[in-house]
Image 1 (cartoon, rainbow, N blue to C red):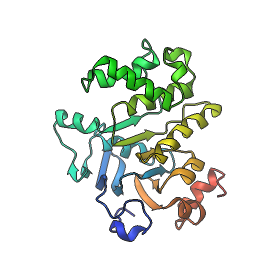
Image 2: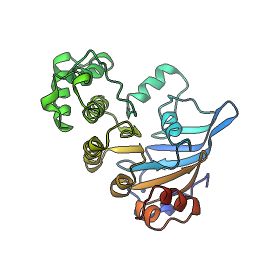
Image 3: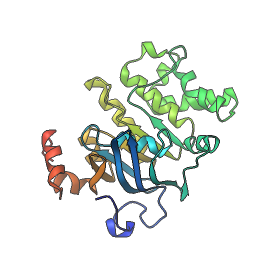
Image 4: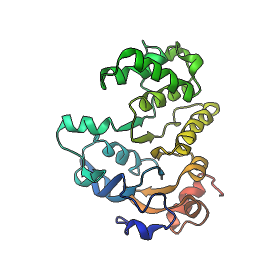
Length: 264
């Protein structure tokens, strides 16, 4: 299933389906040498929607995410942000990236800076925000992710879950319109996964537009508005979580969920 029908016919209950989509992928293709990573992916993301991308490792989910803000170039098709194709010029691409927060598997915090300084740094250096204002905002965001009492800690003195929450606060500090999450819990100990997912669920409840690559099926079913299943670089099924997890229409989706021990 490489193409999708007009949005209104996909699901009458899809969030903000009556408004122009925030992101549109049109027949997006990506190659790495002879390897086809994305095979003509077409997809829409609506404002305030939480979209979860699921599927086996290597099926193209993270590649699509990285193509969203041009961290990876595409070899065919288009990515449109608010109806405008991603620009080719690096200076213009940087402006688009500022509108998208991205949280990776690895936390990528600056080890020589405190949690507060990690969060405040982007607004100061990229947005030109006065340092006192940036630090005040960083404190508000650390409180938002439950880490106000760790503002002075360096990454080495934070758990993996705490570091990832700092990374989320750092992304939010740039006041993004869309948040991209690339398997944000995959590098965490099981006991810290919940604290990160809780922060993400709170963002969803506040109406943040989110695209989440995840293997956390419980989170996808509970929080997602729309779930997209990938296999070998293509979308094989998409729909509301109740359909995907309780009544998938494609055998490969059932097999994938079964291998994960998912019983609905």
